[in-house]
Length: 173
Image 1 (cartoon, one colour):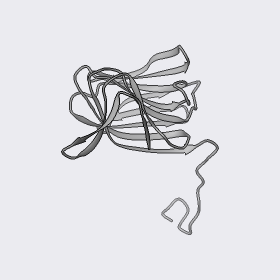
Image 2: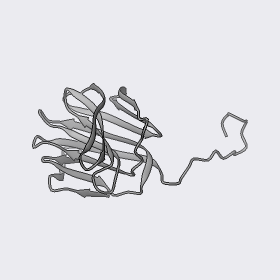
Image 3: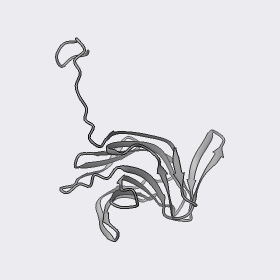
């Protein structure tokens, strides 16, 4: 389920439907609250387009980590209050032209980003934010396209537990 700001819409393509953003606004995933999160999606940026993928986002806009995607560069920044930003914590190669597979991991103190299976950002935050939401933010009037969004995560107070099912220790089972 999504909450789409005024600049976002679902558009039909030859292969189905995609999200398109064309002005500064948010497309929020209406979901449970996640602390440790993995987000996977496909991204296409038109010329001069820019997108923030926001993870660990608060109920409003901040706190959050935002990964800025441009054709030439990808960057990680953090917003901890209304106008308190920590910009360019990490930078890497851009998304380029065409469709690209993006993965973002926010686990513990670490934020990692890959494009087309190649890691472009890896940052360890000494003072991590653990807000709970995920959203996309179009920054320009040039269109951005997002498709095939998948999110996995652990919620607040949850933890993974190993359950022995009868196989050998450390092995399958």
